[in-house]
Image 1 (cartoon, helix red, strand yellow):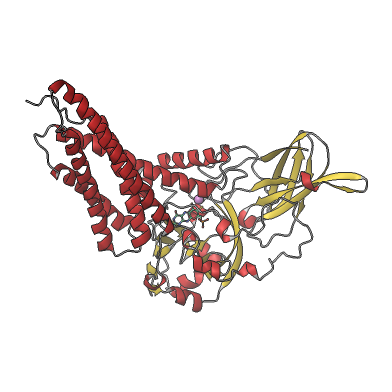
Image 2 (cartoon, rainbow, N blue to C red):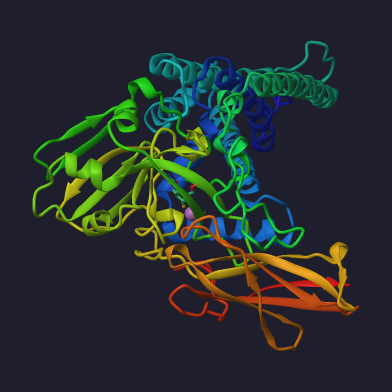
Length: 543
Ligand SMILES: Nc1nc2c(c(=O)[nH]1)N[C@H]1C(S)=C(S)[C@@H](COP(=O)(O)O)O[C@H]1N2
Ligand SMILES: [Mo]
């Protein structure tokens, strides 16, 4: 009896799982770049983000954002997406290790296992993964059957590889002479084999991921064609170009370039929608249901251009999840009227390609023609990350109320909760008045009338209510009124500036604002959840 050929243990199973899952991920990534098939790890992650309890998901998002801010990791929305991508990969790696443990445990109980348990394990994971990707994934461009077949095949090969490795590890080297030494010989042989396996899988992983990146896998950026075309801002002055007050040096750009605009949504990769297969459906309590192409929306209705500041409800005081762009579209009322709604149609239920949805009251659509279906930013079609082909704009609301990638509007007499409201966020989501110190421009200190001054500046924002006053306080001093630059429009942020009589040393600079209706910004510090952050922004600077 060969008592010396101990079968590989569960730790080996976990290790082999990691070694085999890394190249699987790389190959899925490579195929995503070359063939446009779905990248399964992101789909699994996106499914969890939709399925897990809202409180948990929000806690996760809040934690990521707080960490990014605390550790100063730069661009919040970009870093958060990268963090989510890494979590998605770690999730699949963990699953891979787990499969190794389970499969090795099962195979240890079998007399002389072949490759079948591996194939089965691959199919058990691969089939749901393939179906999940086929239904949830909106970014893949490959034929759905090719995608299904590829994912299933990749996972079965992956499962088969576990079983093959298990068998290889169970084999006793032929060169054994006597039972006692055989154990060590087996161990040495196993170690050597695992090292060779690790080298091979590492090579596949690196090459697969590298070629994948080169071929554009996981690309969520701005369309390259859009960069070739000229944006509106490239050849036009901003509407407030001749405003008297100049921003303090170091104030953020008044107009946010599209590729610098924050991006927040529930997708690892943004849905990719082809214009020629897309229509906007307007259905429900209407006499004349519509199916509009993008061209019809652009050409059959007069275009409306609006300068708009958009903020995420997850934006902390002084955060960077806020931006200002030039939005072009059609007043939503015009399109809804064309569908001839019935008298009891009191709500619009807007649905997006990614499964996101929101409700919007028809009376708001009727009374505010600034509520707009938007198809362009900065004079160019919306980038895919920002909602191509169509998104809605609703003044005074945080981004969570404003679906991107819209496919359908249903008129109904039921008021209900949208995607983030169901997950505990404020049903109204009206933007909080906020103000931010962007800069204490110590390199721009200047002299005037015998005094020295340091320019301080930033933005203030209160949705459609506008800003009527901004005040600045230094250390424990009094509040001083800042100067306001004429904003680009009544829906954008206002740039403020205060030139403070220079005093050397370390100081803390505070800012607060009053909205256009005379309501002061809430100074009490409150977290983003559930109604948007409040509190006073401050900046510490040594002069
Ligand atoms: N379809 C869809 N629309 C969406 C979201 C989403 O996840 N899916 N996220 C919303 C949120 S929370 C915000 S803050 C804004 C962000 O728009 P932006 O990424 O263009 O800045 O989109 C909104 N619209
Ligand atoms: Mo958001």
